Image (cartoon, rainbow, N blue to C red; front, side, top):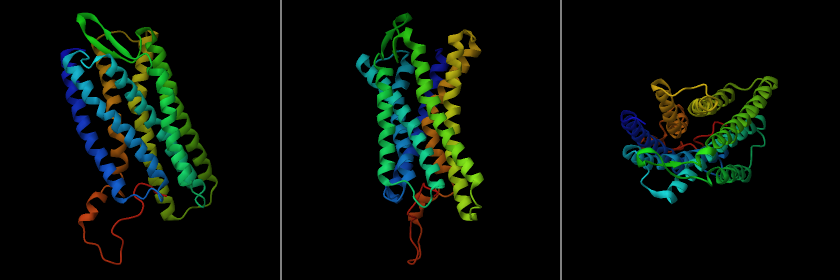
Length: 300
């Protein structure tokens, strides 16, 4: 990576970490302050996504140090830990998004019998266990590699396994979640077309919550799909090395590292219902009115 790209990448990545840590801190504050786990099924899974994305953010400073020094200085053992946690958090975030889509469809299609707390916890555990089971074989060969000019890189696997790993990640971390989410939204669309006319308040809440999750799904695709397409182009020989391709690869990599910031921005800052909640405790409320709502994230 040219020196200009290294400095720019480190600067942008540092800004991403600062914004992401602030956004996630706000999410965790709202969750612990206002949300009742027993009453909110969707919120448990949204926070699961936030925790997974937060783990990714905490790994970025190590990458920034490596980029600025043009070498991996933390040794082979920590390289394995770094690569494992990076892939593990990515999988947990994607599978939690799948669980959110399943829960959202259930809430709308069966409003009289919403998912139980035990089922929501089971989906959360399944998302993390599935991510663990997928990540272990994908990162078991993660190691450091010495390239030209004695530069040490932290690679996700042996070089000749590179595109096998990328293909596996595309199928398991991207395509599978997208298919699950698309299936749930297809079921939901068919249900809404066949169902009687909803009340104005109910349809408004359903639309708001659905738009939030669609934004989350869209950002997931926008941040990850370009890099997968570019990697496959290089593998198939459709892309050639050059300044323009290097810049495109650099931009796609930045999108990957920006993704952990997106979800908290979407379901806190872009949602009218939520964005003023951290400051509600500063207001004076009449005694005959509750000072904080029971449900924060879930638009049920």
